Image 1 (cartoon, rainbow, N blue to C red):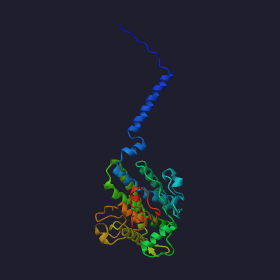
Image 2 (cartoon, rainbow, N blue to C red):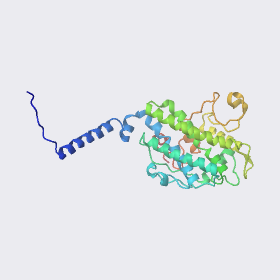
Image 3 (cartoon, rainbow, N blue to C red):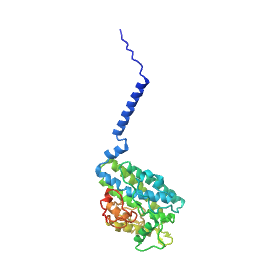
Image 4 (cartoon, rainbow, N blue to C red):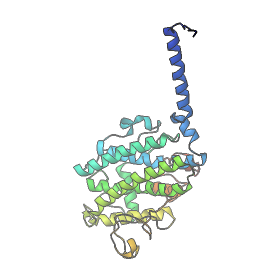
Length: 318
């Protein structure tokens, strides 16, 4: 004869307590499995990769602020204040006088750069936004250096869509080559995936900028009477000289000897003899963006220097 056992119905309090235990356990498991962002930063990125992933923030801050202000008239303080890290607002940035197409493109770039900042800071701790000098005077100084003389009137990146595209040629490409240079030094899979993804979009941005400028390569920039191609060639030569590491940069029109397979003078995309992208070290990048040719001497677009351990390692207190 079968024996039947009768169990009392569980109380509401018992059910609630059981559910609470399940939720607590699930939350703990999720954190242990790397779902928590802070834990992910500490456990999935080798310590040898941290500085290499943080350093590009300097260029990403520049691009985000320049593109946001240029297209929308405001920067990260409005668009994404949580990503500034409490760093100082940029100096001299303002909305540019852009035609509809260029404004549309630059605004897309701006929001992409916001995403880049977030992606990096979701992977490593990062650092606050450095002080950036994005004033017309800062760009004018860079252009004067590129031409070896004072342009009259001073170059103003915010004056027109064409001026802005030429100014956009100045710095973003430098960050792209930095990603190419950092990639072989990375050890972690998460690090390599992040840099590959960032490089893909940065390369696309550079291709768009170069294409828009290439369409106007023979156009003379008012009021200088200098072609767009000459502007890009002068800027590329300046960056090569400041970097002190040979040829890592090319303008839109080159000699056929330096063109792809020595078959063309058109150079809508820059690349080496095998059409492979150029690489730069952090030291080269600092020499260029400081405008000093010396990673130990801040200035230019970074009047107080770049942030992070790599940049700080070259800082010499006065």
